[in-house]
Length: 287
Image (cartoon, rainbow, N blue to C red; front, side, top):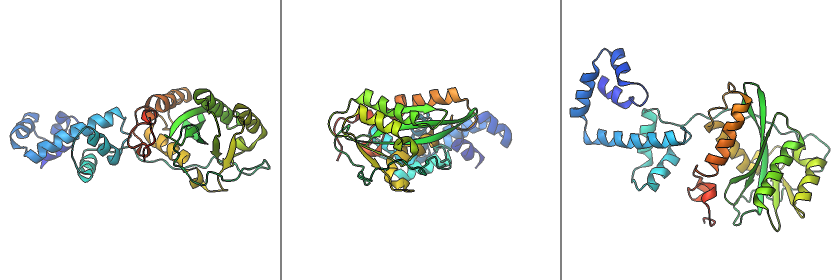
């Protein structure tokens, strides 16, 4: 029973350390390991090793569904329940979710747009429908605020901005970055919540000047589901980025968020909406 426990947890603790705690010899464990493992146990070890390699690549950001998708893409036929069991037993699960915090200030007298998007999140062409939102990021030096612009076609982050405050400038910067990188032509629907950053004159003038004919859309009051795609990204970011522990410096968090968005989320992390490929890998809308 002791050797079985050691085998199941050797990816978490050194064999020598566990042997010392349980009062057994490492050589005895290795002898048992070589002669006593069943075919099923050996198969579990091999599968756990492949899961571990996936989790190390993704910094333990994946839950069992995405691990299963990765393994399936590699050509391995294995059940999702088996993967979930191995991840649970061997400490290979993703990080827990963090608590949600409201950042939207919708108590203002600025004009508000109708909810034209109306939760139609499936879009068949790029640069036709963008959504945007702002969230807080905890750092050792105080709050850092992040604004993102997401193309609903492939869920790519096409624009983003980080600042120490939540003025209109954060939304303007993110939108202008999106326009500069994507150069949208034709009709563009831009959906946000009713926050003052999106409703104020500064943002209205900057966005409409950058994209003539821009169509504005806003969530209903107090209804976060109307902007669910942006909310989903923020929840994913806060769960998967270990630097968001409140103990990391603001500058380090900035670099970590940059790397997460540009090098990982847009280019590596699979997205179920895209048929289990990263946003930048979408060349044609998946039905």
